[in-house]
Length: 196
Image (cartoon, rainbow, N blue to C red):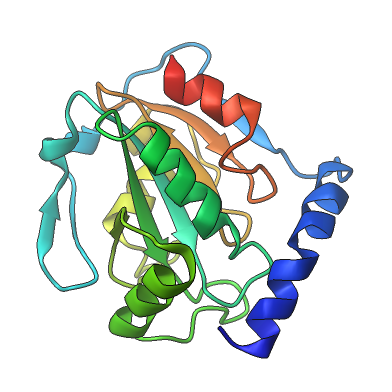
């Protein structure tokens, strides 16, 4: 862990507190009307960071938390909280981390370097996918294309506001929530949604 990353880990709690007091950005979006997707989440696929394909039909019957991540961000400490959440709901919840440089180039590592960093510093055992684009642009990866377009997922057009935006898909492949980066993976609202 670099000196900068250690510093950011220390100031993370203050950043979370400050973000909670900002009202201009939505922190939570919910599919309260239970709108089904137009394209099945379980029809998607994307490569893991080792280059092996991951077919999303294997997630049928489990909740999936999709998170855009970065190793050099104030929110990077959330890798540890994501790992705790993953262990707490092992067998019922899958977590898919999508490293990206979309926000101020805060993910500079290669796929191999990212995996080593996550394992060494946070003990990550959930899936890390290949580094890709998560914001709405022509080369946006297909998973985030689905997550951020209501024409695909049925209701949501919100793209990640920063690193560590969180999207929850239920056991039936329906997108049910989006949480802003400032919402901790171990917050009551995320725990309640995963337990439903």
